[in-house]
Image 1 (cartoon, rainbow, N blue to C red):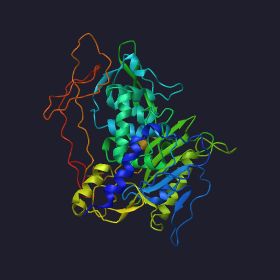
Image 2: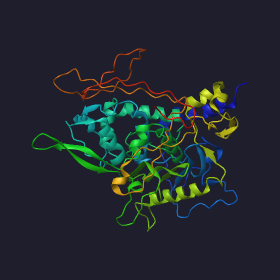
Image 3: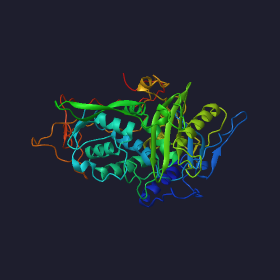
Length: 473
């Protein structure tokens, strides 16, 4: 018997992909649209605040002025409360979470690349930058520190050049958004810089953050507060390095002006700001055994008492409420698993995966997108060691790992090789039709890339379905 899952949910998720080029941007509208996506639950498509308080539940906090927000359980995917969850708004640099989610698995940390002038072309005026210099080499590890800590658009442009160009990277990000079920997301500029038609939603950003946290490298960079970044060369030809610090003020604190203390238990993930989007933020935190994801988009900037820390203070209020209310509310929706996982469940593996039929997705009773018990989709948060102690900030390190959910494919890391042209590196081109092979030789590095002591990447570990099993031994 064919489930309504394939006829209702898959269709509902696939059709918007055909219209993605015409997605409306509501960033300048003061009122949310009357009808929004119902991915994750029918109530999530309604404007206004959605919450189902049970006896003894605390009321939602006052003073949350954001146009859109979501509070979700990071393990189960249950959405505890939401406000205009699917309102398509400008995401600013929170879009870099999707950029990292697709590119982090591709290139090893010691992959080294020499920046070409054209790699930094096209950066928007006033872009945030970490300080990358033309004709200087950087490792992928350096570049990711630039992305996560300084939100550097220059680091994004260089990583995109390694990946084949900004246009190719944007296409891959849009494809990945469709796979994750992030149907409100349309990428024009991979760095999150304002662009016509570029949108996401609080629901999508929360979904993307949850997917990113499956990757231990993503977790490590998200939890890093400070690092050393390569600069120029001194008179003796030695490479200098300078200190960089995260722009995430909820993680490091802000002691100038409107005082903001670090949020205890926070482990990242990404903040953003543009003149169009205002402030946006997605964070993840743990208190006891509870792990929550909170996304806040576009706090009201027209109030006389508005401040640059409003997005963080409102996030902290929603975290506090979520930890206090988690056992006293009924979920109003859920973070759906990737399309490939839902197709696997539809294929008759519900019993094997521990899924429970009857969960509402997109307003229909369908095969459960949120598995129960010990399935790998509802997985525990794992935080890697951050440099919080260096700043005397209260950090919360969790030693359990978050395994990759079944059905989510990851591309193998690309080992770099020395460029063939001894005269110097060339800028990478945008390959449009790569050829597949069942047993390829070691992939060729993009022009400008080099590495000493190259080694073959180990195969990606198989997804584990048990909740407490580690990512790797």
